[in-house]
Amino acid sequence: MRYVSTRGQSPSVGFTDAVLGGLAPDGGLYVPEDWPTFTRDEIAAFAGLPYAKVAAKVLGKFAGDEISAADMLAMCEEAYATFSHKAVVPMVQIGPQSFIAELFHGPSLAFKDVAMQILARLYDHLLGAQGRKQTILCATSGDTGGAAVEAFRGAKNVRVVAMFPEGRISEVQRRFMTTAEEDNIACLAVKGTFDDCQAILKDAFQDQALRQAVDLAAVNSINFARIAAQAVYYFTTAAALGAPDRLVNFVVPSGNFGDAFAGYVARRMGLPIKRIVVATNANDILARAFETGRYARGTVQPTLSPAMDIQSASNFERLYFEGVQREPAETARAFEAFGKTGVIDIPPVALSAMQAVFTGVAIGEDETVRTIVATLNETGELIDPHTAVAVAALRHVTLEGPTVVLSTAHPAKFPEDVAKASGVEPGLPRGVGSLAHRPERFDRLPGEADTIKAYVRAFAER
Ligand SMILES: *Cc1c(COP(=O)(O)O)cnc(C)c1O
Image 1 (cartoon, protein in one colour):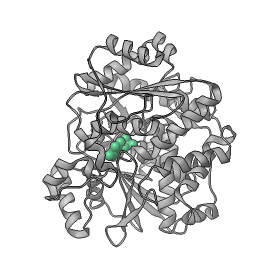
Image 2: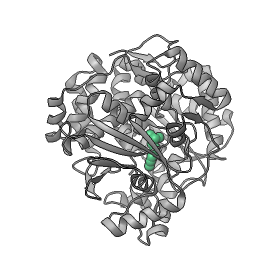
Image 3: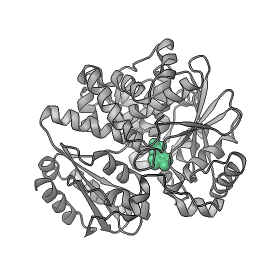
Image 4: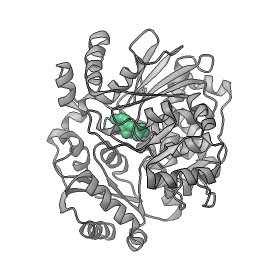
């Protein structure tokens, strides 16, 4: 399987380089040269299989001959054994035709674990085969850092430096990073804001000497392996609800558009998905784009669903590329212009292709809170604010057939807001309870790029 850049100016690469490389050198995103497919019988057979087996089959299509089927299955089994629920992604019913798929049973209680757990194993495997060691630098405003630390702790060929703005993330979020004991993990409390952390990250990636010295890598959601790993639960949930004989809809709480785009990937692979509803909070760039055809950056507003406080959705470039019939020159033109102007007017043909699959819905803060209360009253399920945005969106659209709402975070990850909305204090699941008592380990540094780069170098060269 070869991967091409959406901007067409870099050579095609294999799975290993697409995964380890992250962004293509021309600034584009990697996508498979052709979409691999499953037959209807193969999809029907997923209904009876354990999650890890389906994951190995889906990811195997993307890895091609670069990873053996036995190695892939072993990595998937190990990755999904870290989940606290035997089904990995179980479903609960919340209405006659609506179901919640719980993506939050991983070690850091956020859906980022689903992709990050397998990504860590893929990295260690692929790097080991090349005799390489990489250093992952990440800046987190919440969930990504915890998921990355949980996934990569103990990895042989990867070290992680996780930066977070001191005092600006929740205690639960911080503890998921700082209580890791393994010495390939370093956590940094940076004096400053999340934007300061991101500026430092950017500076580090532009420093060629540092990049080479420590083999710097990123694990953000532009990595195609994360998208591929997220396509898996579209297959398992749809098959459980009768696909391919029944068409299934999905509602996806969205920020960077990685999760919803994974649904599009599953559809291209042969899964009969009828509609994908992209649910956003007040940061509604995607909802506006699908409705009006104008993809235009706005100013970020803080909301109750902070993981979705994004006004430029990096994975949208992948959908645009498909919408313009995989025309790389047009994709490069549009996204280079977007970098300067913050606006893309989607060509009519591309827009109608997008609207044939996607509907965008933006949900305000009051409605999010009301939905947490209503869902508890009507179903007994306590949901987090990100999931509530998606459940609320369900009421704004008319869908035929079964619908799966993706639940992206455990309510205990946002205890204050959930308790304030519902009057019920969400408890941490078994096993995670000890988080509050485990010793923390992190360093504090001023928000200066040079100081932090020196720290990363010293950590990698120990
Ligand atoms: C990351 C995240 C999202 C958004 O997913 P995207 O792939 O960025 O659209 C939604 N909810 C939670 C809890 C998240 O952590």
